[in-house]
View 1 (spheres, rainbow, N blue to C red):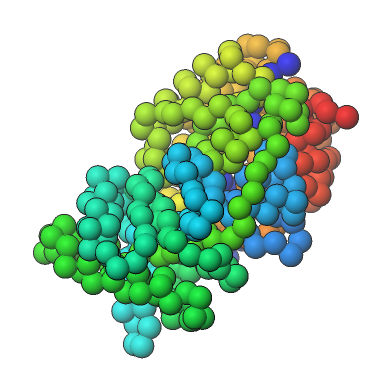
View 2 (cartoon, rainbow, N blue to C red):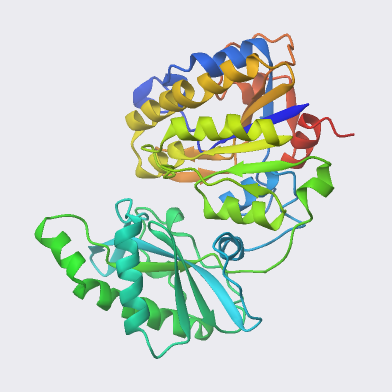
Length: 398
């Protein structure tokens, strides 16, 4: 038997008063997801354990079948793995994101955690300037993907978690800036970066063209290092990951999974869906399990655009779920699951710990449900308290 897991980031949401108390998912036309609900088995899963911060590092780990409470590994270490950065015992990795801040009274507001979907080319220009000009701190910058990069510093481990920028949208950053003595070098680096970025010719050109500036870096993702057991040894099955996320790729590498590079995938709504689908179908010929990660709805949610989220969900249904459903229906040896990683509100532009829905082909359970939406959370037939429980069921592991 072969298994396809489509992780659709941030599809679920809160009811919206001005939209007849419907969610973007309920407002979307999703005939393929709905067909899966009518003909298959649906339910809900708690991907974020109690007392855990909401984040992709938790939901991804959970849906790979690992217990986030047991494998408490910081996002920056997974990023370093994905980028083939070898760390010394004296070095600490940090996620280093280019962001756009906006002045507000005595504070700065996190306006855009992606700096306008910064391109890889422009990001590398800024990283080179930072590396060349911040010479009095033991730091190295590594290019990642667009706005999201890595900084490695010679330092002792930090004891306080730094807040991810996507949790700060619309918030004043002052209260989230680390002010303990252990972070003094990081504050210095951020301040220097703001000066360097302000004076950078490319940013000056942005200013002349009235485009939002790339005016700061945000450092986060610190925490414990660690390792994961081999996925194949754990589940007895070979597996591939197709994802734009360095975090998810790093988890896959940690678990000795195959990481598939696909041209044109961006992590945003403008990604190349066709290439993703083709790569997925190809991998199913060679692997027992394929994880396909579709992230566009999450980014749109964090932009707070409800109508665009509806369009993005419809695109995912038509351009990803539809072709994959058609392909897998031709092969009785393939079972397909679609699962949301965590709730993502386009109303308050925040993640949520809510349970999330999943649907599986081929189970043919009787259900009154006929749509893939938040109603599954209360009315579906199967409810799991963790991602690892769900994956054991899906992979038919006793």
